[in-house]
Length: 303
Image (cartoon, rainbow, N blue to C red; front, side, top):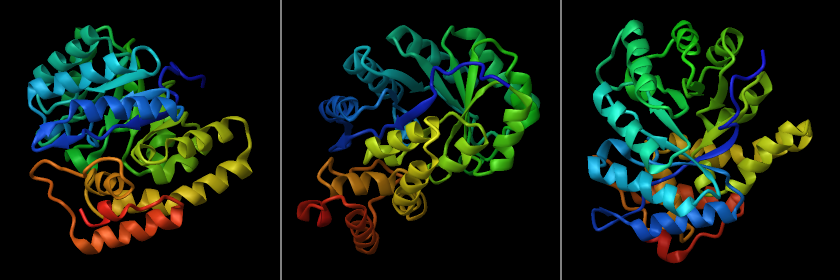
């Protein structure tokens, strides 16, 4: 089947939210946007899981989206995180993202509530009806406590402005079934599975590791698109240890924020209930970063 829409095909960076002394660091966020665009990033996704969205106040959430849209200034598309466990709040955030000039909305399945499949369908359909923005569904059952089943995704695929799904269940079978049932653009939600997902028909990734090495993840996706499978496999093997570490050493975004601080790109500050990693994790990350070819700064290593 041909894809229903390729607006968000390729490599999207799931941006971290820089913090300083408990507040969102708007200056650092804008510098991050510029750096990503300089690296070749064409799609930015602020205020998602990696952006610590559940801990952002309503005003902070809006300001993060607006700042990324304004700083990108058309140089990159913005896929704004607008999900919530409340349908009404997700509708409000999605409408705000549209007004702010975002190019699309990434809407996670409602967490904690554990709705039925009918409830999930009604949730996403209500959001889609409330805004003209293209919507990307986000299935990440390990985080939300509910699973967006392929049958429900198939129903939602008939909603005109639902164009893609970020599939982060970790199941290639799940992604395969969605590809068989729908024409949605399927995006990997796990960096370690990007190449296997591309191999079955996915068209990109929403990436955490690209906060650190965007050029490499972009190159992997582009190599696969050019049918240079040997290069794609080499890049997968090169990225795999770092991607696996960011996913497994600590709950996201603890590891990626710590890694950014270790290489001198940020201070690693988190917001409770997330807490800084211990010395052992920092040491492990330092070794992995060095093996990847990234220079660890002494100040970051001791932060």
